[in-house]
Image 1: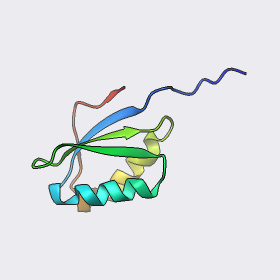
Image 2: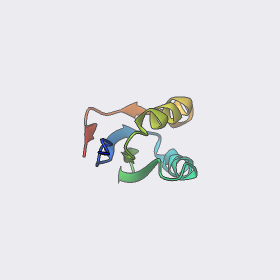
Image 3: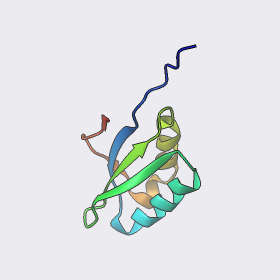
Image 4: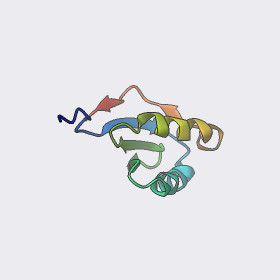
Length: 81
């Protein structure tokens, strides 16, 4: 049987309220194996999410549910890794 799952994480860059970076990191960590967060520009609130294969929709749902608190904006630099 051949496994057809993607081999690479998806990369998603978003801008959130800088003071909420820790909140998003801890929220994602609560869903073990879903995604990791890397802070790219802390003053701007630019973060990169490395999303596990097949978990993209779950991450988008979390971001949508927390949109008001995070003031989340997606950047044009979203790409696959």
